Amino acid sequence: MPFCAPKKYWELNRNNTENYIQNPIDDYSNETVGVFPVKTKRGELFQYDGIEITGQGKIEKNTYRKLVNGYLASISYVDAQIGKVLSSLRENDLLKNTMIVFCSDHGFIVNDKYFGKGTLKESNLKVPLIIYIPNEGRAKFSQITKNERKKNHIIGLIDITPTIIEWAELDLLDQFQGNSFLRLLRERNNDEALEAKEENFDSEFSYTKIGYRYYGYSIRKNDYRYTQWRELKYRKEGYSTNYYKIIGEEFYDLSTDVSMSNNLISSLSHEKTLRSLKEDLEIHLSSTNNNH
Image 1 (tube, helix red, strand yellow):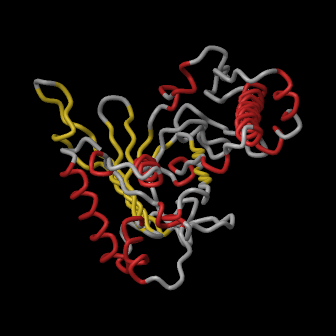
Image 2 (tube, one colour):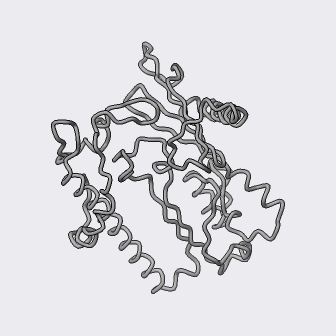
Image 3 (cartoon, one colour):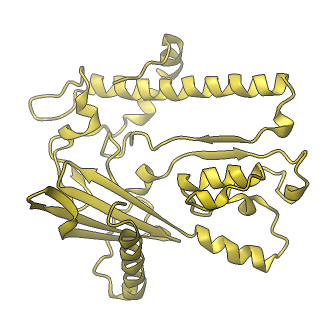
């Protein structure tokens, strides 16, 4: 794998590695992604040299240990580089007028029965996002909370650019998709109008592709997630997202089932919520011509 962190970061995390291999993955040869089995050897993990597996299709334990060690080392290395950037901003007195956004794409799921990133599980779809916004020089945003606070709204990476544009007071918002979430960072003070605007941040859409034929589309709204798996049909021009058959569905109540282990797709008590999520997913896909 391309875990290129310097040696000292590997050493720093060597003892932590064991915490992540208490329940090592037993079988990579016939894993289930979503509601149907796929060969995980086609995933990103097995595109690299040095991934040793046994004759039974199991990943070799020392190889797994090395993968986890390298993954943790890479995280520590990135953390050190972020520290250098912050130190430089502080030393040059730039923190008072610099907005900082830290985020990443979704990494590999480690110790979750799938060392990869092709699923539509909550643990795979969420990404880190930390925002620092200075108040100085921006009277318009004086209500932005000065306290460190974790927000529970659902936002997407598509919302980051509009947020930066609004903070910079540039007249460009109509040129970008997504919604600025700057208002979510302001103190509430029982502002009903502000609360109404927060409705833009109660849902998100995700998708994954497995090979050329299988697509998974998912919608998360408040505490519920609905996922639909499609097998594309072949036409003269090849496989098209406009021609498909549904081969599986998943529906989860994340307030009681964060690990998404209890599929409620047949639950009669959730019919109304499920129907609403299906409609929202179709509206979203229609607006993008099934192109996610």
